[in-house]
Every structure is written in C-alpha cells, then in structure tokens.
Length: 409
Ligand code: AMP
Ligand code: MG
Image 1 (cartoon, rainbow, N blue to C red):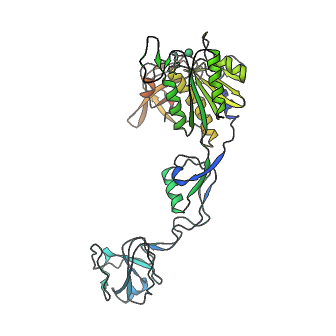
Image 2 (image 1 turned 180 degrees about the vertical axis):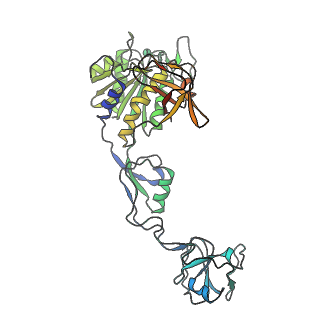
Image 3 (image 1 turned 30 degrees about the vertical axis):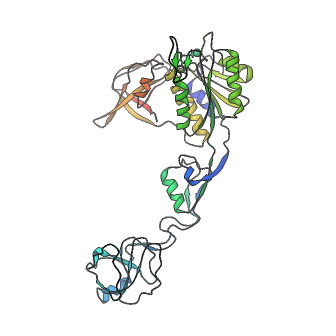
C-alpha cells in the first residue's frame, strides 16, 4: 500500500489481517458481565437436578382420578425439602412450587382446581380431605422434569460470546462460580496539542478543552477495552516521543493518538512513529478523517486519529472499532440499516460518513443530516443515530434514494 490516498476498505483489511492474540483469564462469575467467553460453557449438571412441581397444589397419582375426586392429604412438601411419605391410592401430598415431586406421584393438581383455598401458612391437618373440582388436568401436568432446562454435558454458551445478564444467570443455575474469558484489551491513549486544556481550568484565548481524550477513552471502554490515559503531549518532537515511550511501557494492544498527524508545521506524531517504528498508512480516502495514520511500534499497532473531534470519532468507528472487536473474537461488521434519504446530501467523491438522525414514517426509516457537518462540530454526532455511508466516487445522494446507515452505539 503506497498510493497517496488509501481506500477505506483496503485499510480495514490491512488492519484486520494483523490481529494479535489476547490472553485469557479465569474470573468470578459476578465479574463476567460484558466480558467475552474464551472457553465454551458445558453444563456439569442437569438443571433442574430433580423433578419438581411447577405450581402450588396437590401431588397425586393421575390414575386415582378414575376412582374418585376426593383425596386424603398425607403430608406437605415445600421448596427446599423432601417428602418421604409414600403415596397410596386416593392420597395426595400438598406441594409448593419448586418442591421435589414425592415418589409415586405423577401429576400435580393446582390448588385452584380443588375445593381448597390456602391462606398464609395454614397447617396441613392429618385427615385433611380435598376434592378435585376440575378433572381436566392431564397425566404429568404441572411437573418440571429433571434436566428439563439443561442436561449434563450440554453445550450451553459458545466461546466468543459477549456475556449478558442471561448468560450470567444460566451459569449460576449450573453452579459455575468462575468462567474463562479474554483479558480486557489495554489501550494507551494520548492527545497532542499545545492548545489543549484539562477540564477544571479556565480557557485562555486560543485554548480548547481536550474533548478527544475523554471521548476516545469512553469509546475504548464501551467496546470492552481498558484505557491507560497518557494525557497530553505538547506539539514538540520530544514531548510526543516521551508520550509514546510511556505508552509503550504499559504494553498495550494498541496506541491511539489524536491530532498532530496532519500536514501542519507542528504535527510531530508521524515523525516520531517513523523514528521509533514504522508508519504503514497515512491519508485515507474518507471524509471526515483523511489524515488517519496507522503503523506499528515495537509490534504494537498505532492508530493516529485526526484532531477534529468528529474525524476522531468517525475514524475510531471505521478503523479502531473493527480492530477492537476482532481482537476480542467478536463480529466486527457494523450494524447497518436501510433507510431513505430525507434530503439531498452531497459529497466530494471521497468515502463519506454523514451524521444522520433516523425517523420512522409510514413503515420506512428516513435519514436526515444533523445540522452542520463540520468535522469540528461534535454536536452533529450527539444528535446522530448513525453514519450514512456514501461510497467513493458518488457526489450526490438524492432525496428519496435508498441509503445505508451504520448505527452508532
Ligand atoms: P491538528 O490535527 O493537530 O491540526 O488538530 C486539528 C483540529 O482539532 C484543531 O482545531 C485542534 O484544535 C483540534 N483538536 C486537536 N486535539 C483535540 C482534542 N484533543 N480535543 C478537541 N479538539 C482537538
Ligand atoms: Mg495540533
């Protein structure tokens, strides 16, 4: 790759061909939310482990209903206990939801189908008699068989699954206290620019707050990474070099910088990378984000994002996001929806990512620009549901044309 403007697709492919391997770790289940499973989960037990009642009612032998609807209640079994009283013809055991089905019983009659009404914790009287008033209960009704949910040895969760609350719950139901997941990828980030001011300080004329550092850290964390915040490098070779050295010391899976990567006289990022590593890509055929740079320093991928906040976010979305997802063995294609352009949208022929909001009208989604598309106007991102992709070479999208919108998280 050495043409003057790289194509977006070629750069994404180039990055995805060079994904390092992430280490794994075994951690407590309670810490596993949003982590990515590295080893499939296979159930060590049947869930449930015993056959139980799924209602509050009376455990009986279904065949006894042929001899009459009256049953003598011998015992009671509540969740967490076991009844050892054998069922004989015409007898029943009062049973609560989740309690083990007594030996000999094959059906549970819900209390609502008997002449009984229960109050809070009434005694079971010996010689209590109940009458079944609804005979429609079929054999085996209201019973949860052992292993109904999961069987021992069953593959329950595939490797490379991002763990959601339902996965955590099902692992707990199998008694699994720990899971093996991929380590969270550590990303070192620093911004560059003499004009940047840390939050909490007043702005002097010519200064701006450092929004990119916060935004990029949030983007990395949102996608499952951990951030090593190196802070701000001044616009000098030495300061930029010092920040790179500090970033390298924490052995990250990537170094992300913002700004200082364009053609300005005070842009030092490329020069430093060329000295301590190699710069493989610079300047991509996209808008916003043309000055994007990519390379390696001591084998660690380097993503040089532009300084304009919208360009930084778009290039993160287009280049860093697929890298971070692939690294974690997650699908890296952007979720995109088909929509109809709600207005004319122009492009300069570069691959363009226009910020749009989506509106559902008469069963079709319509895409509208979120105001100014200046690469410095982060509000255009705040108002956006997604990025409308205009392919290379296309100068104009006409109102009413079908478009693809990549959804923002
Ligand atoms: P540069 O690529 O260094 O020329 O920066 C391009 C534009 O982005 C300039 O207007 C910078 O002031 C702005 N910029 C650079 N870094 C940041 C940052 N960390 N947060 C917000 N804006 C920035
Ligand atoms: Mg700068």
